[in-house]
Length: 449
Image (tube, rainbow, N blue to C red):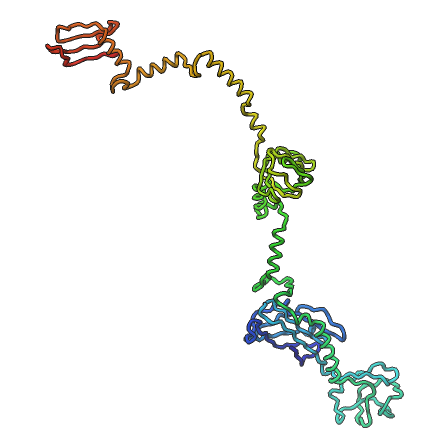
């Protein structure tokens, strides 16, 4: 897009619009930031560095935007406005402004034939009227139809009324010549910033600088991948209490105290590693392989020595690991078999116990079950006095006392209706029975005490 009618070093306002990339028939109506509008200027043969526009474009309505350039921004031969919106739905655009001289600078005369005058500028010829205007202070004019042979004093516009025969020697830069030079400068500037015209919102970068309003911004897939890769490769440290880093650190330490690699020429029961901790730091902890043929296999560590990071296992692995196999050490304390066994009876001690038992059985002539007299007495007493041992209201002891009295105790009153039987010691009436004339018992009183 090109625009004209702009004067150098004079504030300038113009309008523009954008079509959407997704729908070329529709206009973009979003907001532009100053960082999305770059100003590239050119003076003579020099292209100046791009800068942010002083005032961001304002949306006037229906997709039409207004840009206001300051006099300072317009103080160049050519100004290229490059719009690089962050929205991927906007087709990037560039606007070229070629400044025109102000009316007082329209014509430039380079005096080459006047001796002693290096440059002559006629600044009022654009409005000079030969019929009405005058040139002052001309004493004598011999001839100005060709080169001027000699000029004694300065030549200035004055009050000469009759201009007949006057001509200007030298080079007159007209508006056509200025347009040609500016077109050439414009082409050079266009070539210098051709890369900006090819701006691709999907792949090219827009630097936001100090803008705090990120509304509508989104990270590219590559940026997301880069963030993820940086997170995964981050070396975790202890961090500050209460931070996510500290929480991850603590969780890691509950799962694995450290990690390492096998080195040297490893064996199934011992091998060197790249660990450098103090000797004994990993004694009796659990080692778990995480790579190689032994991945997933774990063994308790018997000893760890800092020299060469030497680890000796309590139990052999199914095979020797390979150098560079990776492992972790889990903070799960395991007592060594030697310490566990020291608290148990050895086979030799058990043999002594077995010999002693055999000797006891031999001495008692039993199969190994020998009860003391007190134990036997206790068992007998328990059986004799067991509640309801014979009947619901009789123990075995009571039943035996009554049976004994009935069998051997003294008996009296056999010819009467009352028969009495004494205990075997003749100390108490154990049984007292009431009988009829036939000797049948009609009632019985018992004393089993």
